[in-house]
Amino acid sequence: MQTELAANRGRNGSAGAMPGWMRPAGAPSDQAPWFTRVFGRGERVFGEGDPAAFFYRVKSGVVRSVHLLRDGQRQIAAFHLPGEIFGIESGAAHRFRAEAIEGAALALHRRLDFGRPAPDDEPLHRQIMTAMIRSLERAEAHALLLGRKHAVDRVAAFLLDLAARLPGDGHSIELPMPRADIADHLGLTIETVSRSLTSLERSGVIALPAGRRSIALSDKAALARLGA
Amino acid sequence: MQTELAANRGRNGSAGAMPGWMRPAGAPSDQAPWFTRVFGRGERVFGEGDPAAFFYRVKSGVVRSVHLLRDGQRQIAAFHLPGEIFGIESGAAHRFRAEAIEGAALALHRRLDFGRPAPDDEPLHRQIMTAMIRSLERAEAHALLLGRKHAVDRVAAFLLDLAARLPGDGHSIELPMPRADIADHLGLTIETVSRSLTSLERSGVIALPAGRRSIALSDKAALARLGA
DNA sequence: CGAATACTTGATAGTCCTCAACTCAAGTGG
DNA sequence: CCACTTGAGTTGAGGACTATCAAGTATTCG
Image (cartoon, rainbow over all chains, first blue to last red):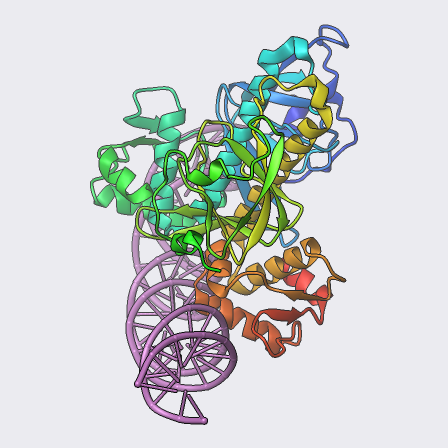
């Protein structure tokens, strides 16, 4: 069931003024508060410069926020897991690109005028503020990580963060993204991420069973000591 | 004129529950919207864990937001220049420490309940939202810098950012902070910052006249090429 | 099976940190 | 007035860490 969406794979594509998907055939009405849309593997949710007409809530799957540098480098500012909100902007346009990693269902909410909040929708307003502040806290913690930690510590902190945010008992996780995405998020190369995981495994802190995507956090205390 | 304030210098000090300065003798009234207070060199504006009763606007001087790691490392998340707002929090407490670098005059504003904004004070509310979003954008750009750039490029980007934010024609700047602060902001060591500046000078991109704190941006185009 | 993608491992090189010495300016006290 | 101290900054040598280049293994898909 690969439709035209598959053509959007990869890192190419331009920032159209108003992608066709913004008015899906199944949209309830032009003024509905929100509606759902499913995105395919690697599909772009929005691009840099696209009008920020919506913000998004992840219903399933995982989305990455991607900054592209002129020299071709890529930085993943954040991963957005189920239940999380992303894509809130102050200006009229999105400042970076967002892509579904594997496949994702998103709830699209029409954007609000944040300067003049609707007093009759206080819960939503508070939710948006919370999402924004959480983004800020994450970005600051991320900067701290990138500025002051070595490769293994970055990976340890990343695994702990994922374990806390993903559903489950927190003792084993299924990585929802490839090594390349982790590398571009942690400011490392694919090879260094792989070596760091191997190193953690040899230390007995984690275990890497069959698939490369599942990780057992054998010694969370040791992980926390590294990632602290 | 060194009062008790001087005792607050350095990186030590604990996060008191309610510092005395929060109720200065000269405060107009208990419900005044804001008042001004002067901070000495290195003095703590608030500490990690302090109740976030106010947010702040810089009237003069420069303030640094400092994250302290358990292992003694220091990360400066941001510098706050005249005219800028900082110290806005979602929770009840400040998540990091803020210190005046040389000496600073700050306007202290009583904090608002962001979830239930006063409809009668729309301009202030918008101003706060803008400040928060700007913080977010800065933090994201900072993470990008730390994750994907080399020492010289980081310093170049930092100089350009400062030149744009400080008053003046943008062709020469007076660094309002020591090398150690720059290093802890850029995720480098003092030595590497010094070497980067020397390297930029030898390339003819900048000039370092007499004092070590003044820098002439001789070739902004080249700087932008590095810091881009 | 062949091709493509994802991942791991090894060898080498480059960048930056650490440790150390040195310069410079501003105070301080005899 | 000058020796001494202190803080800030610069410079050098060596080493640690990570990127780069390269090869090899695994898995998936057509």
